Image: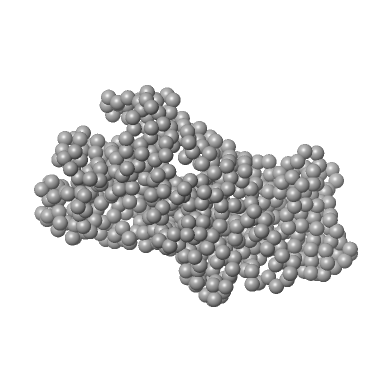
Length: 617
């Protein structure tokens, strides 16, 4: 009788193993096997991190194995089981891989296809078409859209983390990490210990230093030592945690009536301010988004304030960017003076502090929360709803949305909710942060997520004119590496533009993002469909870059771009493409490392060895 060798790999994360009964059935083109109990005498099967092998003998030839069914049944107490993959050695000596990377809970079951990526048009056998359809029907019931707040991108329909599908919840280790990091953030903010300092005026900058979060690294120490200087202030707009606001000024706005006489002591080329603008030496950062946003009133004992400043910056003869004028609100007038470097030292310093405070609010709520976390969640939900696990685009993207929905759900539970951390620690808490997201949605466009286009739209593309914009330089390298990789993967599975256009699952994925994530706004520029391989490659680059590199640039990440610990792809051409992708990323790491050797203040946030795959890793 035919005999198969079945190899079962259990996950290595906490509590991944099980003591429950595990049964296997094989479904082939010529027949189906009986249900076989996978059990070895006097052996503890399916322990955490284990790889176990079993011989399964069947009564008759099954033909080509199309599906493997795994069932888990209660032994004593139910425990969840994380199944990584199953490998099958056939009676003819062939090996078939069945990736899983899923939790099986309760008296649950999972039906697996082999690891070859397939488009819907590739499935001609009824049982495979049915499996594909049922998987999506089940997922669409589990992954439902919900409006957390009016005007926000839609998010997952779950009130708390435990309501999420088990496969996208934090593993135990990651959950512990989140709790510890949240607690550490509260500790670092000294919410209780130094609350009296927030509720009264500070006497001097020594008070500020008492609550400064001590992080022992070159950057934080240098910033702490030089934060009052104009050079550091300008540098942070280029390479700090929010390097996406500064733009070249092509015309001085009427609401910001700066004159040559005001700033002539800062201009080094003996030109008028208008001439400096024409030569491209003037830059501007406008915090108009904050105008009229309600300040935090959750604590009646603490008056909190918000500014909506405009900051004019100048490229000096050393090609460094420095501030030359600041107005703290949007409407000019006697009560809204323009502050200048020639003013009294602390008047000018306080004006810069107000700008930096506004920058913080926009960074946390818009650049970080909305434009990386919430956008990546949209991509993730649409992916789970519309792309089956066998689809090549699912296999490509799944690592880049890992834990994204979970961490965002936690954020809605603990950070941006009523009485959450935002209410306790941010001047935009108590509803202001919600107003900000609602306003910022009009500027959330597809083009603004395409890194090269976003840089050009702000007039910041010239390396010769703006030589110290490392966020741009490194970001373009990473963007291009990702684009080349996605183009290669797309080329493997889509031999023509027509195949792209006729892939119904792909088109449903793109449409879901547009309809639910972008709320069907035509002005967003998000496509409702993709028509070509080139367009698909760009779209996938946007998804991956937003979740990995862009998030790392504004959140200071740890690692992993290009590393895929879960092997969803099994085909040799894709594995070779991944290897080339890693090689390209390693070259970028070397380029960045060599440049940083010569810098007192290195920029490494977009070095691929520090970029996580997703916003939550």
